[in-house]
Image 1 (cartoon, helix red, strand yellow):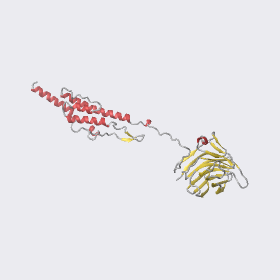
Image 2 (tube, helix red, strand yellow):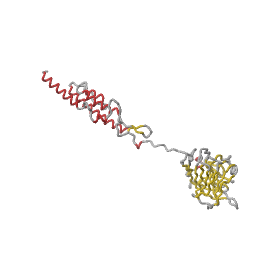
Image 3 (tube, helix red, strand yellow):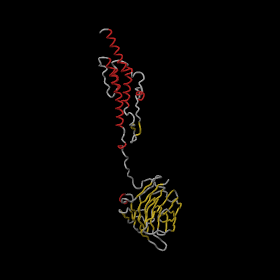
Image 4 (spheres, helix red, strand yellow):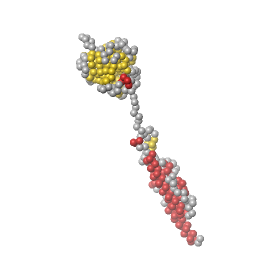
Length: 347
């Protein structure tokens, strides 16, 4: 080949190499600044707590860090190579998106520059592909698992402060296991969701079972005294047992076991201790119409005990006989119907 022609070919080769390499040489520009370099091998994907407590990627960032790093490596290799037939090969090898490795086989140097640009473009495509991958991997809020609905008993084994237990008697509490009959005839009204304790001989009682971890709480229940024995000095009564430490023997006789009782008659509010006998703590005159629902509320906090009816406090006493235990319902020489109730656990 004539010397002048060879000179023209060399110049053309250098010009083409500069187009492929010089434009990306030295400072790689904003794109390279935004992406992590091959030195730290990192990814700008941000980890965030996922719905299952693990980590998930923020869908606004590049999810596949390797693809983006390789794209940057592709741009760097173009600049480092400057001009030469290996440029396209280096860029293609570093691009996960498939930069074409044609530089090695290129018969002429000018083709490698074009391949180098193709490799860089492939790097950009790899970054775009990575972003799409991140969006595909990002958790969809509509697909996140919702926590399983927990099924708990109406009254738990413990009574942590702030907890509120309730029983609306929406289902039969005697067959569900929420309540157990200790003695006397008890029936469930499924239509009106009520629990009826008929007059026993002389007492009828149900309870929720042993609760040795229950200490301070307030019980509130809807109660209707349907009938009661009355003579010149004595009244049948209906109400709530609380802090039941011992329900007594099977088919417990009246006033057996270890517990407090608070209740109402047609003419009184009473509070006392059942402990193989009756010890009266309070007896307050009042007037309640038979066949009418009232809200009976009993509070136990430390040694302080209180009884209220329809929001009016009738008795507050101090006693340390019993400090723990669950709750129950009781009638004595009377029949009563009970509706929805709540137990609020106190500090």
